Image 1: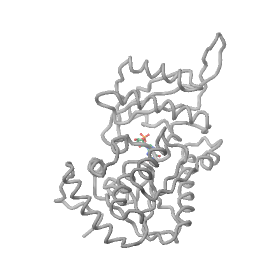
Image 2: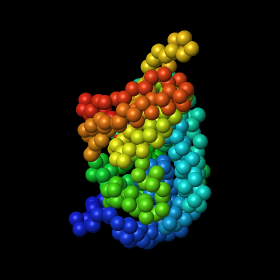
Image 3: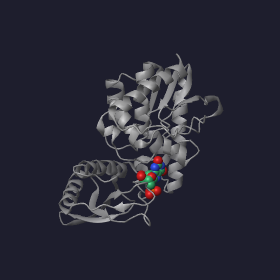
Image 4: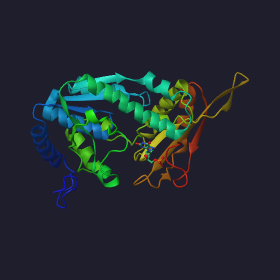
Length: 324
Ligand code: XMP
């Protein structure tokens, strides 16, 4: 049987009971697969890797070594949440790597979007490789591959894979959720006790805020993107039905402002909120004007450097969801 093919009779996991049955089954399977050996996992804090981490912690406890690389391009509060949930609450074996300066130094002055993505991807693998080399006795690599990854690619996860590891660090894979669809992964995550803010969070690109701080990333503009994004997520998150994805981009573009009668240069923060089914096409979502005004007021008051707030009403096509 092809282990990468979801059996036709596999029932969709929609309930807590079904999730618990799946968890029990996988806990057994993982224990059988890895025995008393160590398993390594790159834990981004995204839904898939978090669910795999929680599942493996349940199955093998401290035999799992989670490596969280903070590359400086994560959303506000994310690295802290990974530490809080996995180290403090779940007592996981978590290696937290503060690689912020490393990434931002490498990215300094680089304005080509594809080059930025490549630098982020390559540096991520390098940091992960260094951490893997410090550990003894690792024989397995866990990955948050899910079924759409298998259907869409050849089973290799496009963004948070560590597929670029050198020959001598090729481990046997542990992929407990590889036959699940995203909605099932979320139900399993809930049953494992992960917080809603982790299980139901919106999609976030692998290169993170790097694609929303267009052009050459500077620390001050990156910080502005992070702060403005937190405000927009908080405000739009209050809608009864939240859009599929909503965020802020701050392009490398100067905007004139006026303060105390004097003109000065600042940035324009762009609010984007879209609905989509598969991210191939997307529709801009209508945001109530009073909410837009509240976000404008908060961003201007709370985010240094921003003197203009815009709302991106473009659909995909022709505009992509991200700005870069
Ligand atoms: P675009 O901008 O192409 O985005 O319309 C479609 C969806 O993919 C996400 N996205 C990325 N995800 N690495 C990722 O893992 C990337 O480089 C990347 N670029 C875009 C984007 O957030 C949207 O959900």
